[in-house]
Image (cartoon, rainbow, N blue to C red; front, side, top):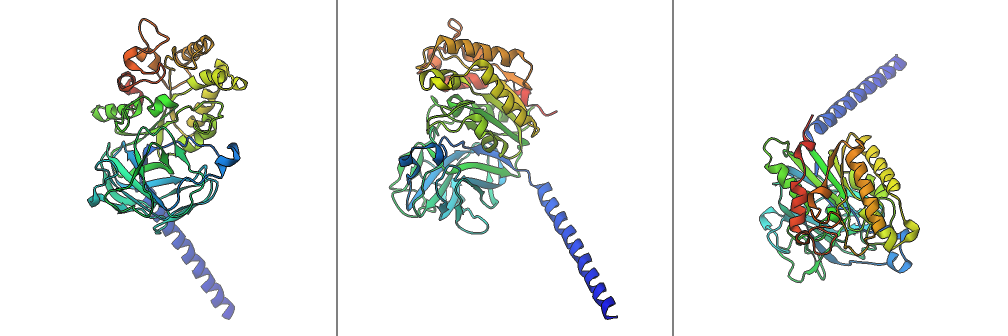
Length: 420
């Protein structure tokens, strides 16, 4: 009898455990069924891992007992958000003492009525291991698309090497000392032109069906556009999609990186090559459905002007495109190829580079490899000198200005993003 009673009790316990597991799994499934996160803003690090840096740089401490207040222009609405912080290229664990989010008013000023604290596992701060990325806890925070959000991070101790994006085209702010994450303004703020540590903002509960990621170099990064204007071509594409009543709502996340190359890297300002950073900067984002690929001009130009041992052929660049596209398609992402824009007159222009550009562009247009094509080359080339940008579209013969980026965005056939 005693053995029978023990067996019965054990069986009852096992049954209860199975039922509890089932209820937990059901609750988890229900939660995931109602969540629909999209990445409404993103930053790709232009830094390099410590092992690729000179010893004096790898031991650098950028911040200590300071507050960073950084601005992110989100492209989708939601009623809940979460923030990603990255210590991807750090040389030591990064301690975040406090973090807040609010709507920006102007400069380092915030709308205090919107101010909320971010948490990490219900804690006010977090230690981010070297090389890691963390998500904040989901925070009820109603936000409209095309709002400037102000994210404040307090770094209470020496930060080590920062994970940064150098060509933000957006002014941020750093305090001289102390935790000012809840301050209405930062009176002693030093203006900074980088984004540090803040790597993405996801929103949930809005209208966006998915995320379009634009991948590229400084032309996708928006270099040449007016600072703080959000006149990069991906921003203008997002506005066009919003105004197209017959199109689904999308979030647009910018994975452009000034100076970046498909196949190589050497400078600590231009980030890891696209094939190396693709997993982190694209595939790790939330609910990505489309990828627009515009990169390769630096592979042509820099291989001659900076590092002849890294010279690449058109065929090698195309092979890089194929790798990127196949990795995206393995995740169900449609890949749209964009032709490389003219660069005659730029500092690293060469006739050999132009021949490669023409060869690559012909392949993009005619190979049938991509799920769609955007012909940026045709959209903004000077009609009289097709190897150049028109003078009213550029200041340096490489990067478009506000007018050039508008022409790029306006040339995109929005039906490329229709839902099937």
